[in-house]
Length: 106
Image 1 (spheres, rainbow, N blue to C red):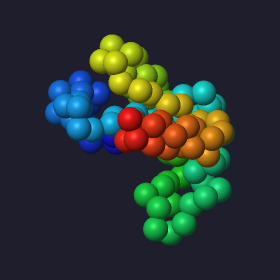
Image 2: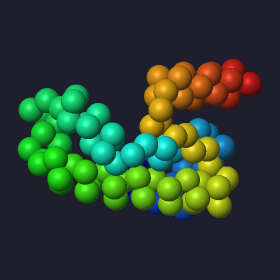
Image 3: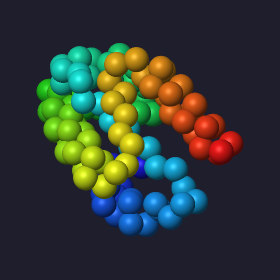
């Protein structure tokens, strides 16, 4: 689910029909400055954030983290899986893949 495209409630209503697996991912446990630094360190000219100033990126990250906290609460309310990808992103993605494989093979 891409949080800027739909709400958790809509995602639950539209896609939670037994045929889909829904995973919500966002960064929560990270400082906005660290998140902004991570974005800028990996920026290329093709990235949406490339032309942002450091201040704009910091402000975006601050809002993004706050929105992610709300997403997590919505996931609890609607019984959807939420994963914080701020730390150990690779490990979190591996956990998600294991869960997908488990659900597909069951």
